[in-house]
Image (tube, rainbow, N blue to C red; front, side):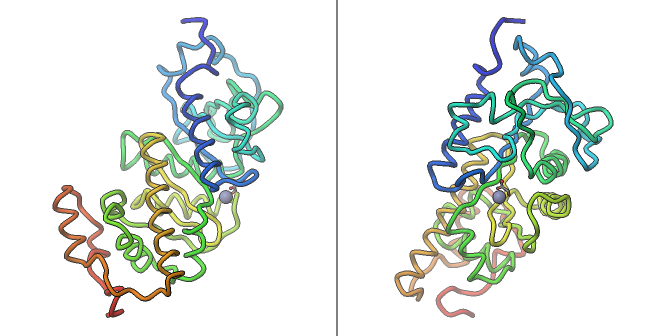
Length: 282
Ligand code: 2HA
Ligand code: ZN
């Protein structure tokens, strides 16, 4: 054990940087967005100020499957704009209690904050991603403008939306070869939206919340942020194409998509790899 304080850990530093990045991209206005980072006991143990339960907060769903796990989580109502200067107030380190219905706060939330209102969606997503990815660590939610805008103008169909996004830049199919999952519009902060999101996360790492935002999951902050950057860049290109008149006279073809997947050795979603041309609509 060192006398090092948790606020100086690389985990808090990553949280400060990523919330600032989400804010400066314009994807987390006011108290929009939330991030959770699963930490291992071996990662938090060395710090002098993570070993005591400061208080306990109940959660109204069953997280017993991940009882004992540790999460660094942004606080409900807190502004991402401020996290960089106030991580000990606007984020907290929690451990899921044994019965799965409460969390022990070990560090942070030092002016009375609590975990994000989207904690059910985060923890349910962590649970389902851990089943398919042993390196799963991060869940990130934000409000990327162009992707949200597309949820008003493009049919909320996973194949249609994914193929448009794949065809906006060569990077897309390489970064999210499984495509984009979509749930119906639902009330934020509920267990229902959490369950629907986590269900999609069995297959996808990016899930669109129509007319609201996106959920992403991954093994690291960089990778998860990168998923959001890439899908939002594709949506920005689509928006720009629409503002140039919206008529496609060239496109990345299905054969081009296939070639990308061969070049990068990835397996695209077999249900999405072939379909309509953006030029002919057939
Ligand atoms: O308040 O983004 O979905 C944070 C949110 C809710
Ligand atoms: Zn939101």
